[in-house]
Image 1 (cartoon, one colour):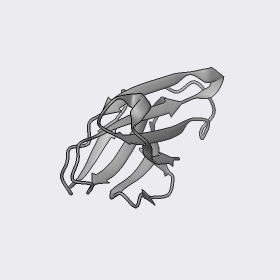
Image 2 (image 1 turned 90 degrees about the vertical axis):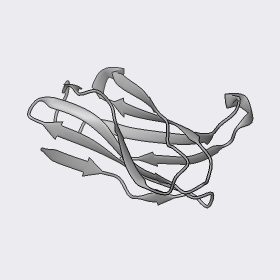
Image 3 (image 1 turned 90 degrees about the horizontal axis):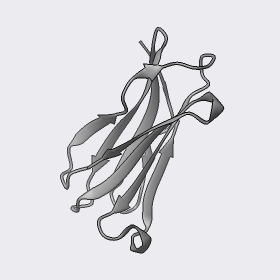
Image 4 (image 1 turned 180 degrees about the vertical axis):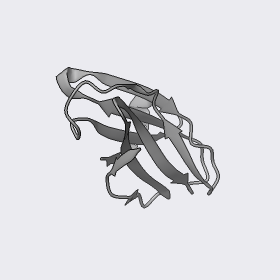
Length: 108
C-alpha cells in the first residue's frame, strides 16, 4: 500500500487535518486524518478527485472531542497513472450551510 499525503493543516478554531491518497494495486481511495478540538460537532466532506473529472465524495461527522480519528472514501478502481488522484477535505461548523464559515480546507 502506498500513501501520498498533503501537509497537516491546523485552523485557529482548533481543528487539525491531513488528507492522503491511498493506493493498493489498481485501487485508490482518500483517507482523512483529523482531530476536532473545537468543542463543537463539525461537518466535513472528503473528496477523492481522479482523472477525467471522476470524484468520490464522503460526508464525515467529526465528533466534538479532542481524539485523533480517520475517515475514508470507498475504494475505487484507479483510472489514471500513479499520482493522478488528489484528495481534499473541508470542515464547517453545524448549522445551515449558507450561514457557517469554512473552518479548514486540507488537500493532498
